[in-house]
Image: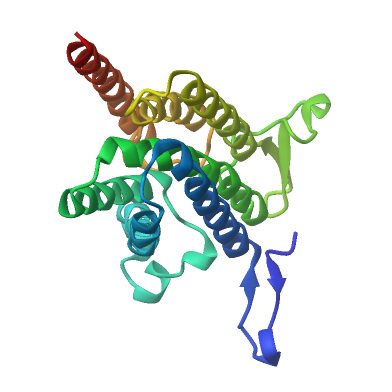
Length: 259
């Protein structure tokens, strides 16, 4: 499978446009468009949203890469160029999400905006971006699952053929992409029905935490905190209860304000 949309751009050897980068960029553009559209529903200032996007996108990419490199330090410590080579793959979603949320929170504090209103605006976009971005893993043939030895199960979308290994593996990137689309639909439908300020942030924490915990258990290329404990699963086990606590807290506060 060719990883490049364009090779040797302008005839310059090594100047390539990777499908991975195109897919990630496309996900970002569609996510921003969705967030801009949702500003009409949530009442969040669209100009402030675009101001935030100019800051949050580069920070999220840097944090996603730093998170990945930190847990694969032995492979990167000898070369700074390898550390920053995001076009070769190696972006950890959780790193980008954490960095993005921190930036968004600080932005809202400085600009005196509602963080929960912002979250209602952008959380569906985050899920959409993640769903699209997983297809970059397909092109790079990474983030796949366990070996499939039964010929009857060697078909897409259950499995994906990995050229470098000459083997069929579970298409975990596809599983997560589809589950993210389901989560996105639930978010959009529930917000339209209830329109409760702040509920989409804990819904993301619980929903995506559960999705990532389940899918990560099938992957063969996970980052490990210590042997036997996957980083993303450990973080998911923190994210899910925190999401439940936040949801209950927001709901309780709304009940008190309505009383």
